[in-house]
Image (tube, rainbow, N blue to C red; front, side, top):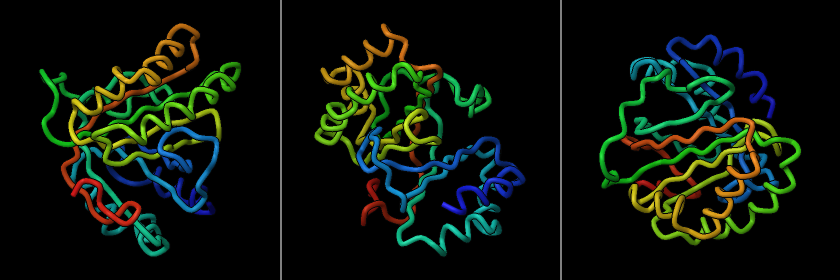
Amino acid sequence: MRQAAFDRPALRATPGLRFWRLLGTGRGESMTLGADLRRWALFAVWRRPDDLEAFLRRSPVAARWRDEAAELWQVRLAPLASRGRWGGADPFGGAVPPAARGEPEGPVAVLTRATIRLRRLAAFYRAVPEVDRVLREQEGRLASVGIGEWPVARQATFSLWRDGAAATAFAYRTAAHARVIRRVRARDWYAEELFARFVPFGSEGTWDGRDPLR
């Protein structure tokens, strides 16, 4: 928790780091009220692969994460599609290629992120438990975690899927999730949102004792 504050100036000064967020995590597979104070995440968008390699080799931030972690997992992601904003910005700077036809055959990663309107918080969190249960039981889910910048009001879910078809089936064909999406649109729950899909192309370490992509 100390480094969540002290690492920020170093990250702001990191060459080639175009966009980043230090994130806490929840206890469930999606957006829950409970926090796991031992598990943290960094979402980072890099200008070039060489900038990422230099960060991993030379940055004291990366060294602290390695030294202090009981477990560490990292994944490299190529943006496949994105819509929305994060803190008023497009994290990818308009660099996401046009969406390809059809679903990817291999694994995909999905990031959904939202700033929830204060007057909609109670309704949002009433809907979370059923969606969380369905997500845990969904065929084709490899792993998922709830993440967030602020407790309660700025929430996200990062998930890994066997393929694009499995991710789409959960997003649009499960009754519980479809109901929540309809309520979000009809009742204007979010002040801001971002939805992005990625193709994972490299991973290291373990997440809950295993690499979900291997």
